[in-house]
Length: 591
Ligand code: ADP
Image (tube, rainbow, N blue to C red; front, side, top):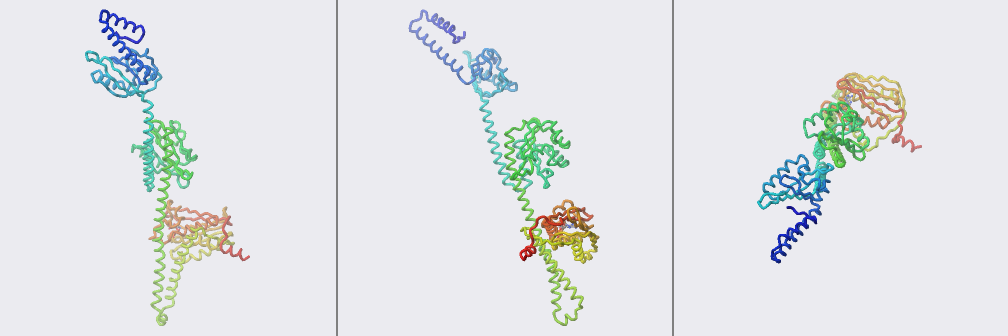
């Protein structure tokens, strides 16, 4: 018969002991009483410990029914001992763990003395608590397992804290690693691909990086990553087929504000409302979105977007902080890679320019040397007298032409370095455009007749305050290009007043310019043709543009390959703000 600690039961026990010792020798009776006292004291002690301890203590019978339920169990689960005694312990377990716990229980019954394991208990209010158990099987006299005593510790908070710490450590490690990768990568494309992949691996699932186009209107995709190659390929196809503007779609907000956007639950309606239909399949199955702008010196130049696929947890504030940190590092890496590739391109352009320039300078020099050599051969008076005067004239003209060509090349180089140092000065005076154009046409007539082109110059006179020499350089350069690239067909330069002030339009019907090259040709050393077919330094249009801009004007080209080009210069009649040129400064000083 089990004895509890209640006073009633204790009295019962003591009466039974007195019955048993009646008739015994007094010494034996005293020893038995002392033994019983000891046992009772120990039992009270155990009872106190079980109730006071923070550990869960459950005693189970062979069927897994609860026979003992201490107060720690009640505190954790919310169920009192009175409700739980006699109940099967399995009901407390989360359903997916029940089988495993039964198996462990079976092994304990089969004679394994102890076991250690973890499982989740469900509390009265529906929470899950993780408990780490240590179990002992108690045997009866026959050696059979009578009860299982399970002692558990609630390790929910500890495990959570450990997981958080582990996650933070992983992220820190990943940040450090990403920084290392970013810092080592100077190849622009490779850096972007690495950035996208790392982000996808760290925060998941898909990543996209787009950069704002030079004109600020479009988003240019530069890296697309998804762990599934099929999904990545689909996204690349959509991005290529449906370019997105900077002010369109969900990205417009973060790009304009420079702030990260986190959408924990991305709904179908939101996608339908804010994205154009081409992008619906792109975001199909995406349930959470995180968009961080890429900025350098407060200027947003692109964005990184992370997309969580269905089934994954919504992005958290912690993910957002990590992405922001990574985006910041990525922006620096991208900027470094961009600067590096720009520097490399500049070096390559300069190298090419140097080789073209040396070739261009050598050609007239060789011709000049030939002409001089020709004349040297006839230095004696008699030989000279025998020479037909036309021959002498021809050789001298050739030498003069080459000398002029050299002079032009050197002047162009000087102009470029002047512009580069910000020293392009204008000497303004009143100029009549018609007369200036007529002069330029006369200068180029020889060159045109060699290619078979004619130059027409229709126009209306217009006067303005311009730098005569510089403006004449503009017209000559444009005309000379029109003749050079004009395939021997007629060239026309028209001019006159316009809304902006005055215009000059130089049109040819020659080889034309590919759309992709039309912007570059106005830059230094940029050429759209090979130096083998057409000589030239690639400086003319650069100088032209800078002269036009110095006058407060604009220049643009319209052209189609094979159909010719039209260069339109528009000038105000009087530049708004110019530094007075040398001549003007001298005039002022003389006054
Ligand atoms: P260059 O003629 O010395 O190469 P420019 O700066 O004058 O240098 O012109 C730059 C490039 O622009 C040329 O190399 C050529 O490719 C292109 N280009 C300029 N004018 C014309 C034109 N009228 N037709 C076709 N291409 C042109």
